[in-house]
Length: 112
Image (tube, rainbow, N blue to C red; front, side):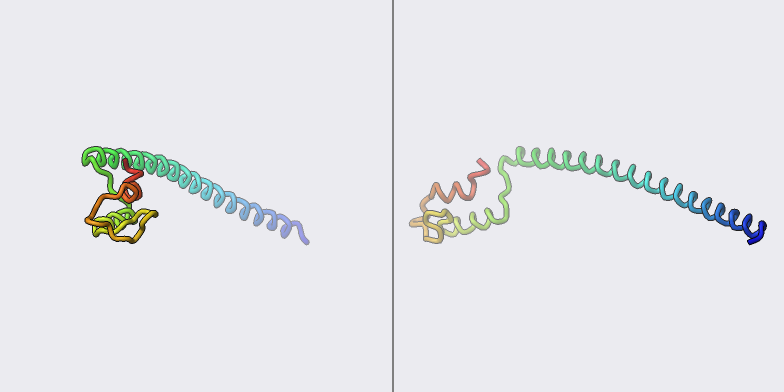
């Protein structure tokens, strides 16, 4: 190998390394931006969740009643149609639509 070819080889490797270093610097800057945006979004998300929780608490206090989950709303509907939803007498008809403390506990127990 001649000296010129050896020198040209080193010059080419140096250029390749420079391009690689430039690409690495660009990737590093992009990664820094992504990490900063991610941190900002996490903080904003936390604040929005806290604000949403405050709004939900305000709504529940202003209406005086908490909304039932879908499953408990279904149990409430069955109860209002005259059926027991408690484990003691589940599915049996309530005689003269009498109240059942066990059914009411199943439907509203966690909300009181």
